[in-house]
Image 1: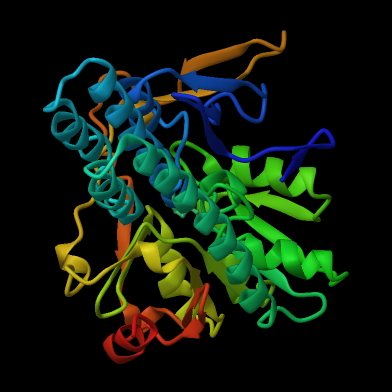
Image 2 (image 1 turned 45 degrees about the vertical axis):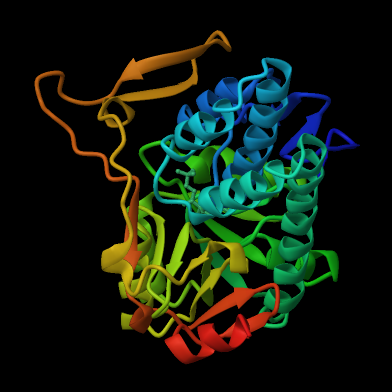
Length: 347
Ligand code: MRU
């Protein structure tokens, strides 16, 4: 996507370094982070310099390729196995990470060059899948459609285009007059910071809403549909996504608002029979106690926003059962969230 007229991917590899947009500084500062080795890339995933299932997957693939480069350079044959464990221990929920490490590890056993090529190929496929999700999702979007979205499942969550936002970009690109309600998405505000920044950059009308305003707006008939991303989709169609997604899905069902999930096939996990098999990341409670933002002097500051003496619990994701989902928008088209339809799309 374009930033100040220049095209950017969210993450890319050049030589043995991986470069990525530092999403912890957005929207207040636009800076590129350079991960010089696989451990830097692991740190970038863990600390959410790069985040979002698609971007995490691409970064994990590049990190695996970096590990093979370092393994050859240091003649350390065990390094790639160690690195795979470290990359896979960064964040547990996004299936795309494990899809990437498995794929690049297997090619790395053939040669380092093949590992790098495969990681590049995975990133390119990620872009093409996101573009196709946009094409199929656009078919669901009518003129004047008012869409709510949760977290950031835009191009910053992938390598380009995004998942949930890709249909919106395609619709707007075709001149459809769409409007977006952006859930702020506490505690890290991926909506208020990243999705709002993307939509502003693309000139798409939108408004930021408190997370707990969605049900009310749906009850007032102000939302025509909801589109969200996904981190892992079980064989029965249950979906793991950013915490707060489940509440929106229940409200959407109650008020008859179509609820779509947008995700590529690399997010589906046939090893998980249902959402109960999906590991939910519990993140540091400081993400709830503190907020980072711009102070009156234009300086990025971290401030405490909760009672100092209280503990906080910070699950990063939740599980939306298939029964609350209208459909899943994939790069191969729209499917029903059930075992048969999912099996068929992999045939
Ligand atoms: O914790 P995050 O920011 O990595 O969570 C991201 C989400 O939940 C997204 O909705 C999902 O990964 C899809 S990103 C295209």
